[in-house]
Length: 420
Ligand code: HAM
Image 1 (cartoon, rainbow, N blue to C red):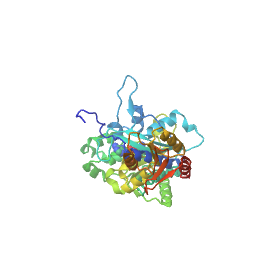
Image 2: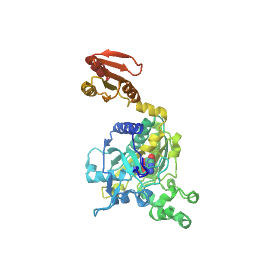
Image 3: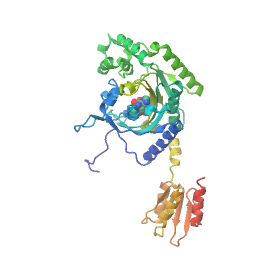
């Protein structure tokens, strides 16, 4: 490869080979789990009017202030590649008047790329695959909150094949958060001059985010700040306790983290993050929470939502070898056909086998028998069918390497029985 060959952008992945297979398997498992919660799959545009993210994700979140991919303007409106899904889905609910549905709460699932201009490092990318769900209603009740929360956990567990660890916190309703923000401002008033520039900005826009600062000196200052739990209204406390009680009775283990505020501005009420204990260095594999005023903020009705997103890359990095093999075993090829007759019989047979729901590949005519068998092994084919020059069909079981001659009818009968 010459030095000036074009390379993929930093912080992106070419999903090919095993990674390509794992990505599509992951998509299938996660969206199937969402289906079992009656979530409807939606797709929204990959770019939106920039103001959507400024008004929803928030002016104090790093995602909006520093990390958006803004598209070059060609005299139209300003557009931004979506840094997340929640704002876009809320916009779609408003624009398509989906909130008028008699069947509330609305339940949506999604899977696709989001874009954040972050500094790439282990587990941190610029194009991120997110799977998630959003539940929307005029008022999100406890049952719906727990549905969203459980789906996030169960879908991650289904993919990883083991339990995930859960951290949660409760940020309170919009009203109680406003009181808390005022108290935080009071606390930081005589300290903010000695804190980092990001904190100074957060102090003005959303002092809650100061608690999220990663600068060690600032963390020490913030340690004595009032906690959001001290400012919850009676109604908030009741909701929080009921949610905790319900998730405990389902049997979910969790840790309460009173410093968990999340990096997006729209949260009110329950917030949570998921981690894989074996891969804590990757950061959270997912996170979510309730948002009570986002819809109104972007011009919709005063509806609430609750949802979460899992990070696809971090999930894939968390898969151990055993789980990867389990996931990939379903992807093995059912039939590999070697056509020594070279008269098109392979294409006719492949079409019939695929009609019976099998995966099939055909060796190119130029490949010699030995090379073709090796290729079948590399493709992890379950069976090889050799169409011989004397027009007979020889079927080789690649597990026990036994070979037997079969008629076309026998092959097709076996292929259809294997389906049951
Ligand atoms: P988030 O916490 O910003 O939440 O992102 C969700 C997940 O995406 C993270 O937990 C992480 O696994 C993954 N992720 C985020 N940024 C990166 C990155 N640069 N590289 C690799 N993985 C990353 C949201 O996006 C909210 N929309 C979640 C939500 C839905 N809240 C309510 N509804």
